[in-house]
Length: 174
Image 1 (tube, rainbow, N blue to C red):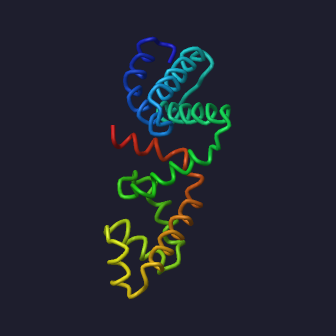
Image 2: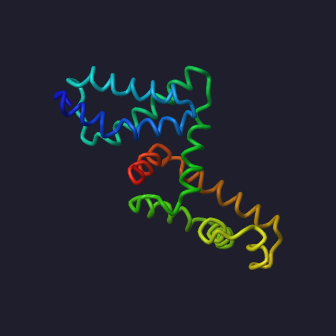
Image 3: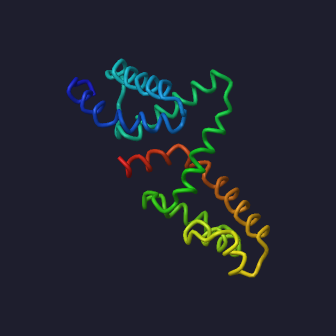
């Protein structure tokens, strides 16, 4: 990274992805840009001291950390930010990187059978709550409860994955 051309290429390759990621987390265009800019400034200033093996995960983690630091300094509960990651993974389960699918499937396998069935019908087959209730012969409230419980259980299992979710998403979509 000591080479200005390499730094410029890194900046060009990752600015848009990092900015989109930062904006997704902050919902504030100016703040998102400032955070990404700060990460690149820090990267340049510390270029002689850093030993980075994989630049993409490093940059996304740095942006995430800057976002958390910003919100911590402003008395913001970072669990709200982590929940956004988890919600994203759950809502976009089918588009997740295959490398992470094994872990996600193992989390699904830990769900009780009926809960898993209801969640899969809802998320993968795009069935409505009414359709699921009719198909399984259970009440709509039971379907809602099963979905809610399944999502809660998955969120707990995804806590450790929260930092990597945006990297996976943006690697695939940009």
